[in-house]
Length: 109
Length: 116
Image (cartoon, rainbow over all chains, first blue to last red; front, side, top):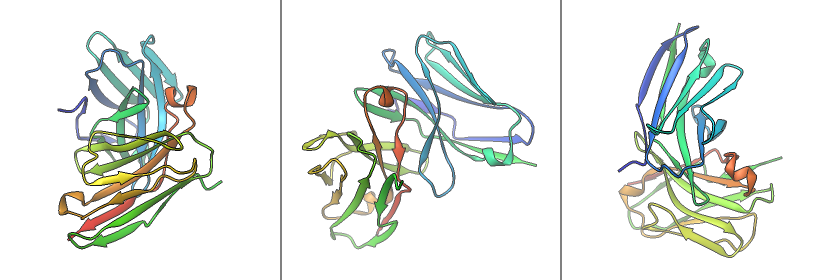
């Protein structure tokens, strides 16, 4: 089964906040990541969080980590049309990143 | 700076044909990866390499082969193509060390392969 799980779709109104959720299974993961994929392009790193942190904020992005529940979330404040993309959660295991299936975020006017 | 370059961008193969997807990076990265992306399935790791001359299997290596004779190049070979190999293939690289831990993977633009 999937090591990293995410819901597949999210629709959000422009200007609202988006929250994308992810669960992972490897409790030894020390680093967790959010990547963004725009249409026709490869993935780009958005942000990462170290496992000894509960929260990390970077401009409009807020990452929350609940190690007890193995739950990671990404909040995008004031969502814009340029935020429409697929967002992947990932964890690091032995030099390799394991990715979730990706959440397709659609921003509507 | 070219970054990670994949060729071809698109290819249609017949069942049983073979081909090589090329991947080159000009960042002197030690770590290189091949992923395939299928709708609703996310990215699955096919093979990876932690340096020239060293390769290892990922989650879904069957039907593929790789080599890493130089730091720059990491070609992916498909032998006897099957419809199940229809996918988008991504090559990625990382310097390793702290860069890997902070998630600094650089991805190519992808190669869309269709096997009919």
